[in-house]
Image 1 (cartoon, rainbow, N blue to C red):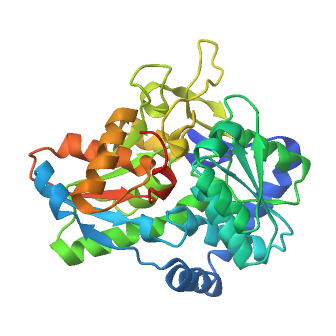
Image 2 (cartoon, rainbow, N blue to C red):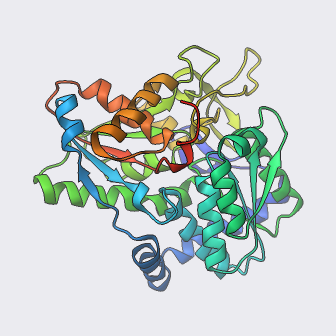
Image 3 (cartoon, one colour):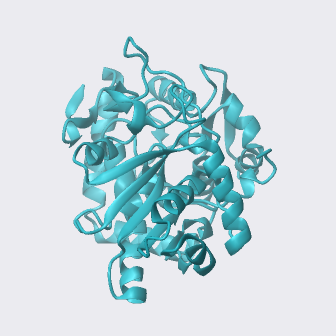
Length: 382
């Protein structure tokens, strides 16, 4: 157990079986070493620019701004290759995997965006890829399942538990324990050290760009920033660019489900600190402290755990987290489509919904992270 490593206050660490200790320590050391090398970072930046299409646009949503009564910019991660922020992390980790001589990539996915990005990166660097996905998510995100298979990945549905993202992570971790020479390309800001550190590093490009862009457009920093929070990777990507700017208020939108406990995925709003899937953070638990299934219309937010750094930001009041109900997200999903011609992922619509609620007639300057596009959700009944 490497519980002392990768800490954010009392959160983080690596609570793992002995069979994985050597592998994750090697990964942590390799990550620290490679990210100090100019050639690694140059290759990463080159692929972000010429393959992913970065920098992603910061778009002044004039119609939404007029509707809300505040000046709102959208950070357009939906414009990335594969349609979400997930590709940033996948490109970074796949470069590490290639340099480590990995013969197989494994990944988990909920909404399918990380699975598509992992399959894409694996195809780019010619490494076989297995993607674990809850059986329910396989059904509700069928388009992304087809995309993963087209890209050459093997999609492995799991019937464990609630058959959603938590169970996909369990299945992937189980496979990793049995096959420790595989490279586990974890998609969110969760899990044992060094994964939160790695994912945060590779996603920090979002916040770096957004900060530079808003200063260029407005000559000042925003009053507030917003992002949806499931595991927490797109949010920490944006937040990281503004953590030291205490005048910038930080807001995270969690999957609120129907607005009642336990029919929710709002971990930071209703959960308690515990050890879950290799790290110490907040988790939705029952009266005995055991994890319970989460419930959200958004597969990418439908997870009972949370990033250890988000847990720390909550406890220190640097960031504020709110549950956003399924219906509020659906309303925002439809509104943004009609006002701006941008159909965002239902996950990102939670952040849009929270911004609409908190910015109403405030005349503030804000950035909302649109973490993914909504093609995958169009055919759903909403």
